Amino acid sequence: MLKRGVERGEVLRALGEVFRAHGYEGASLTLITEATGLGKGSLYHLFPGGKEQMAAEVLAEIDRWFELHIFAPLRTADDPARAIAAMIARVDQYFHSGDRVCLVGMVALGSARDSFAEAVDGYFARWQTALASLLRRSGLTNSQAQRRAEDALLTIQGALVLARARADAKIFRRALSDLTARLLAPPA
Image (cartoon, rainbow, N blue to C red; front, side):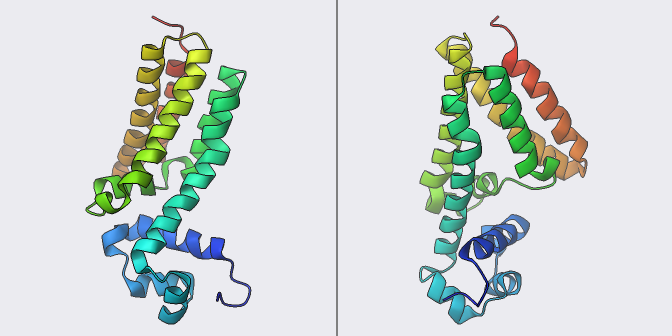
């Protein structure tokens, strides 16, 4: 049972920030209890599977957000330029203009990757598929669309890493700005 007035979504957001700041491996129970304001007993009542269940639910929550705000709109959009602009704006919003790391990407690079392989792969595969589908509808061949969608994910993830490493969020914003033009460029 959650503390009075504390929503499960709030707990998942707090857990997500702990995992972003310390990685899955470094997210100790002490850090988790401090961030959530819940005691160990409450946490294990909510998440009987422990830290692995916590991380799985956080990844599922991220996936739901991206499905609603990124993947589904890309799959259903009629206007590629507007859909790409909306995707870029939402990505910028979600990652706080490059100041917030991609937790799914962190998990993919960490030693916990195998525990969450399906969630990690599904997140990136569905994003690439949804974007490639939009790009095919804009007139690109399947091969061109797949390559550009892959390049988009590489650009976003790489820009997040570089912006964080260099402590310069402008890197991320420039990458997103350049990405829009590359995605909408006429077929070569």
